[in-house]
Image 1 (cartoon, helix red, strand yellow):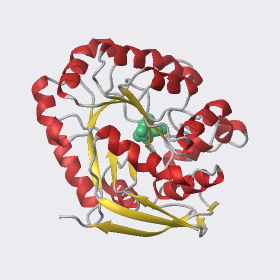
Image 2 (cartoon, rainbow, N blue to C red):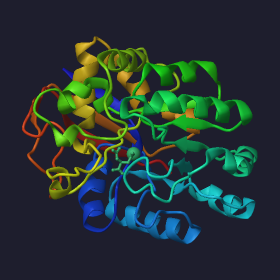
Image 3 (cartoon, protein in one colour):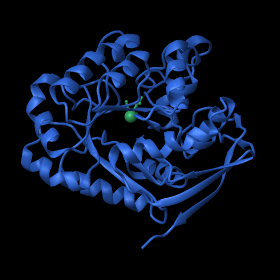
Length: 337
Ligand code: NCD
Ligand code: ZN
């Protein structure tokens, strides 16, 4: 059995920098025709100069692949002139509440104090991508943040907002309430719950922000993805950390999934009799929402088992050592001129 996907896209990726970038970016570019590259570097990508430099580094790391990096800026109090200058080079601006996750210390402390920036982004039609967590109790952070999503969606009705890596039924409710709100969902949040992270022996490689939630949340997200909700896109939040930052006290948040995403999703969609829906989840919805023309590729997966390697460089992938029934067997780029 085989399945062929056209121009799969990963709408939320952490590529990092330097050696890590050179290890992980080709793994994404080998399977995906494009992806949204997150700006939470140290220091964050929050000037046009830093954006151009980072774009060059990403292009160098993915050289030879038919891969479009969709770059983002790290949200701050930008002027209209800065936004106008950045617009042709970015897919959107990523907002982090200060301290909510890895490398987010430069994030926003008071969201309503940034209304003037949201208004400019709305008038320039620059999408806003949001890490939606409060500083409340860890299991409640996304649910509590839904009021912020509602505030933004209501106050700026033409601002295109993406709720990144949603993990709760509450966020699915917000999706239904507003035309200007879309969402990414990771592969791991479609298959794991908090039990997989800390219910038995603790698994640091499944620890991420937002933390995996309850079975009913996972099931609601999965149902939405399998029905191909038109506003839900794959955004893996593949977030590599060196093994010594994961297997230690004070484990860094982030699950590294880039090289296993398509096999994992093929297995998941097949088990739910929804293989024919995978194309929309991994590409079509994102193309429509962001009006993209990614490189034209076809990616073939076969029902040939893949054993997940113990590591890629010094990064341990999700489910290292496990077997997945599907693997990517061919990728073709179609050059159009
Ligand atoms: C991400 C990272 O490591 O950069 N970590 C994570 O747990 N997802 C940041 C993020 O997207 O929250
Ligand atoms: Zn992320």
